[in-house]
Length: 243
Length: 104
Image 1 (tube, rainbow over the protein chains, first blue to last red):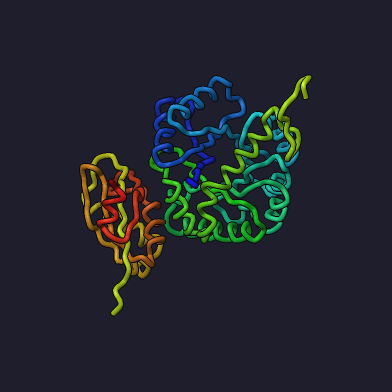
Image 2 (tube, each protein chain N blue to C red):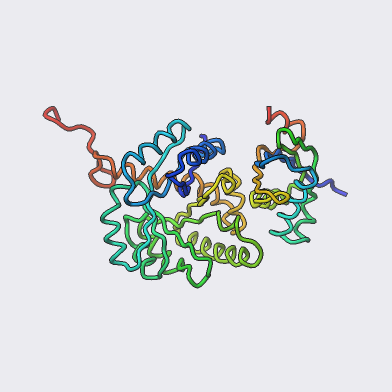
């Protein structure tokens, strides 16, 4: 069966429709079938519809995503309550340990992203992985810093990523490899991203990280957000007087 | 001596303009050296087989044992010469004949 490749982290400037359209067309050319674009919480429905139309024209599936940056755990809970049902992919950008822990144990969170390049500010350790393994959260790794950095900074980042992926594998936390691309030149083919992931020893998990894992997240959330969803494994198949 | 196994890679270059073959292969060598060091780069037996400036495509040959290393290094290329660039692997094959067949 043909693999479906996904990039769940594509940074687009919605105010520049030509550039947006160019990047979306490029992702389609590179072989992606599904993309997720982080949208600001105040995004209007017509802006999302416009993006959806561009993606439909490029024959690529689109999933709206939100990146939640919370200062405290209670702030995170509040934002999750507000946005969970409006976005198909919810990512928590973990900038503090408390927020990272709360995000890892919350079943409404899909992705955990650790943007810091400082190894001490990346909070994906064994405790975090254990919490994430009991919920539904996956570890998201962006490829952009790997492409942009050079020398000792890249070596340090690779070292952190190698440690994090080893922990994630030990606790069976799914890993999602995304581009985090802000321009066309930072986009890579899914298999090239998988090759880059071999730099931090993802090897046999790397193809799943660009295909099955992100696809599973979007499918699961689409089912949950569907009006027919009742509970995991239960959905309405028919309703009315003749049931 | 046992003959070493090789792989041929067809590449597509995203570049504003057309880099010279030397600029291109230097960028590939630089990327391999940056990621794996001089010793790692020496194991790759990297050779430029064909280069088409019009189509911005190239064919390189590498040692099979280092195929993964070279693919990662190619994906890490962001600059050729002094301009932004990207290199995509289009096809991989054991012979030039079958590579050409894949590309058709």
